[in-house]
Structures are given as C-alpha cells and as structure tokens.
Image (tube, rainbow, N blue to C red):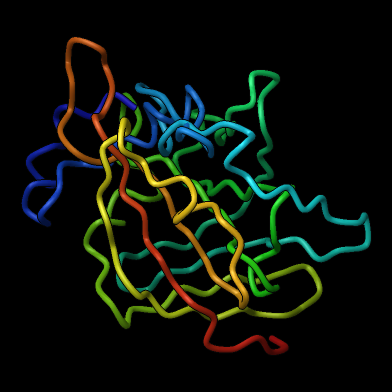
Length: 212
C-alpha cells in the first residue's frame, strides 16, 4: 500500500497511516506469524511457525461481513491462507473495501484468536482498515457469519509494533476463549522500501454470539 500521502492522518491518531495495502500485496509476516506489502500491504509478515493451524472442517461456519461503526467499516470477507513460503497472504489489492480472514485459524466467535487483515490504503485511495488506529478500548466490532450468527467483540487495546519486533505469540498464539485480532500496516512510511515500518494490531474479546 503506497500511502505516503496519507501519513499525516495517521499521525493525527497517534500512528502513521497503516499501510496494509503495501503489506497486503506482500503478505503479512511476523517472526512466526502472518505478513503484508506496500502498494497493497497488510499486516506484519509472519511465518507458519507462529500460526496455530486449526484447519476448519468443510461444515464449519465462515465469516461473511465485518462492521466497525466507530470507523465506518462495513465490508465483506475473503479467505486468506499461508503462502508456500509460510507467510500469511493478504486480500487482493484491487478491492479496497475487503477484509481477509485467515481460514486455517479460528472462526470469529469460536474459541481462539481469529485473525482478520485489511489494507490501510491503495495507490489510489484509503482502504478498509484506514481508520483502525483510531479505535479505542470499548469500541465494538461485529462479525456476521454464514450460520446466521453474529459475533460481537469489544476492543481491549490498539497496539503498534515494528515489523522486526512483532510479537508473534501475543498476536497469533492460542487463547482459552474467543478473541479477535485486526491487523493492518502502521508506523512511519519508508519511501525507500515503499512500505510501512510496522503494523497496527487491534486486540478484542467476544461479548456475545447470537442469531441475527
């Protein structure tokens, strides 16, 4: 996600614009978790080692839409997985309003940490997780699933990590209850490498899981 022109907004919310677009075109990579890239980036690079793989049975529910009222997010999902090199792939950069769900991990609302990625911007416009860094504890995130259930989460914290110090276990590790991780690009924008220097991660816990 080449989003140098948007960095000023990121600073206004305490962090530089999240370059998920840049990360997303790469892949989200963390020392042992998922990765992203500029011009269409997502979250921090991650390797398969960091991901607790919990391949879902064919009959398992799938998330269909994510809504975050506080930052005007209302977007459909696409599934993402790990690349052959063990990095977390990202949603296609040609659709700025699209969230990616790591399909081999927990389903949002089920036990474990469900991973959701999104671009912060593209070469032409802001993207689905442009405002992610502006979220605050207590804000809500709703995920609608194809089993007609809606999982509502409450934000616990919003953190910014440099890519080299990305806490894989903290972000991708297993949890005893239902959790949600929203990831996009963050930190300052490195024009030389056409990428962001870090990632923004939103940590949230499940409030409720009920029928639509």
